[in-house]
Image (cartoon, rainbow, N blue to C red):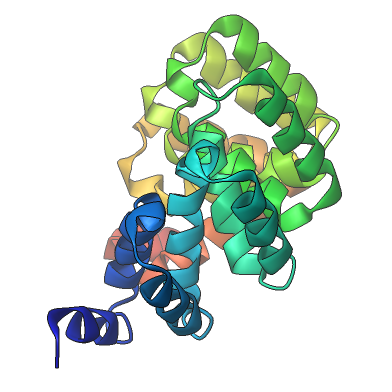
Length: 239
């Protein structure tokens, strides 16, 4: 068997490898020959992590794709939610660099497709710390009008919560979660999946607020549940 064939076979055994390989293949997709492109799509259709990663890579490289291929790709993604989410994520990570017309098209797509919206929000959340204050405010405003975008954005903000300054942390915990259930759920889920790495004061405050906020409580519980087996024994008992 060729190295390509063996590499693609390995995606069946290791989900993280599959997503990473998909990301790399998607990012360099335009340089692959058409037969191999079709083989990748065929393999990815049966592998959720591979198709998610492929979508991420294609989303990052979206502006380099021909207009015809962009349209064909989005049409294919309408039939595959993981591909759509991946494309959204990849595009989101490029928010600071994409042309204004593509940026607005992406936000319009996020209004009409909830999988794209979640991925787009998560992708933007990935580099949120590097965005200007004005852009951050604009994104919070858009999140207040789009529930799925809000959930995706907040989830990634929760997972990177430690890196934000106190003012932004307080805005998210005390204002945004009170105003928007989906934002609260997403933030809670993100905090829950990284709970052991949070500062003690943040842990206490998140738990305290969760007693008064159903969205944060449900998200936090879901995040903790998703990573329960990796929690320290003492925390498992407290949970």
